[in-house]
Image 1 (cartoon, one colour):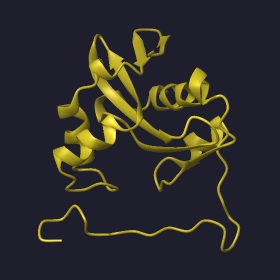
Image 2 (cartoon, rainbow, N blue to C red):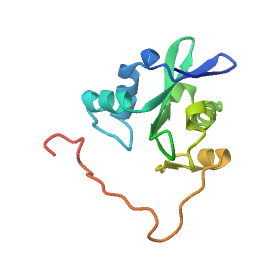
Image 3 (cartoon, one colour):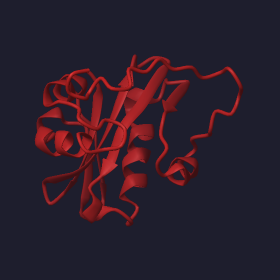
Length: 148
């Protein structure tokens, strides 16, 4: 069952049928965090996550993806608003919807890894993890690059 929120002429929806994979892949493949990602990988990640599309006049203009077990933990990733629509609070609206979603209310912790717009996430309630030896990561840095 999908959820939907409205703010003026904008909508956020979790209906997977509304997602525009061309828009999502087009943005992510040029992003700082997923540069070069192939369409198949994007499609697989979308299919296996709770996705939030941001829409204006039925056209997708933003996206966020929650990887979760729906019980204790969620990982928010691939958050974006197309440049032509940035600067008017739509990023905040989109991320707030990921927190308000009814199926995510049991989550004790939501994690976000980002180097962009930290002020946005702090306004919503995210806090930086500044404890030494607390957060760890294993990264395949060049996985989306040809020949990797």
